[in-house]
Image (cartoon, rainbow, N blue to C red; front, side):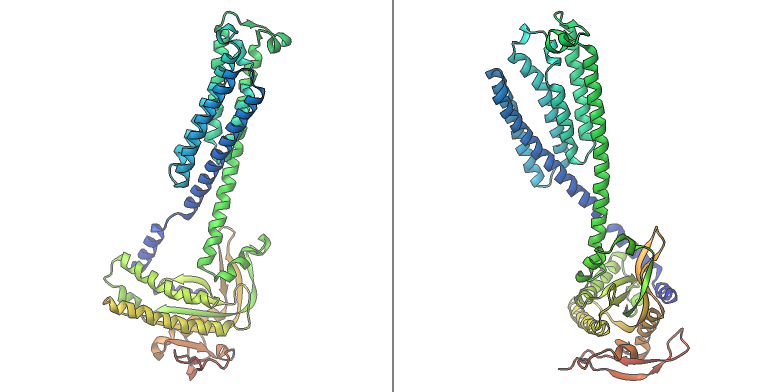
Length: 456
């Protein structure tokens, strides 16, 4: 197979290689797009949870709040938060401003945390109460909850930003408390927790706990993001299977266990098809690279659609040629016949394509198709770093040589005797003389299949 593939690749001009490279560079990064989708979903989930948190917090305050001021002030803050959340949800629904919405959410959380100590302080008397009271509220617990909540968006920067703001807030509250002459610094537990005293050690411990929690949430979010990234890549890889395999085969390959996706393969009977454009180098001479890419895409799209319709698998594109297998990953009794019927459908598709090209004043496309069936080794070939699911064996080389014989024999579709023996009575063929194909000592009996060969 290696020799056959190499000769096909040698037939591709350097100009066509440049075109293929340009085409691959122009494709959008699907993994990046899907990761952005996951990030938007994460920010959306965080925004929803933020709204539920605000509503729950207000309900709790209305149940256990001490003063009417505390209840009303907390409600006003929560309503403001919910209004901002509504705007954020609208922007996310329109797939806009994901990062600004996420950062705006962090800002809302920080402002919310900053407002709570002031509300609580004013609700118990304000300036009539020692400023040390603000340090001894439940602001630490609420801060830790908000930090954990921000880990939902798969962006480590969010919990880290809230963590940094929480530490600064606690530091400011501690500074205000120490600036109040009524504050009594003490190490007495009862006095610092239930009395007017203030423990600097406990306040600093709260800041350290906030820092540890923020660091842990940031690290866990980073790990979660990496897992999401790997999942996105696997999802993209799985979706790309549909570009090479017929839809019914994709689920079969995706369901394979990891052990079965290692190096190596298995022997099985497969029908191999080679389809190659005629005079590709001459046709593309003088064409701009973008026009060559458009020509290849137009031709390949038409052919692949018919290949998939008959359950074929795209093994690889070799410049303007296509290598197709019928019977991978699982062999079926009618692989050879499906390959021939697919080839006839490809010829019909090419006629339709050429009719459109003539209408636009473009030159028609011609191709040749060769099909052979026999034993191959099918599986993952390569190294641990670079695997390719393909088939190897003499059957592949013979199929390639049969396709090469189309041009000198003036035929569009040639099959081997092995394929002929597996065809049902519904397909009529013309027997040709034995042909000496390149690279083989023994001659190969060839059969031509015309477009009108299907029995009526």
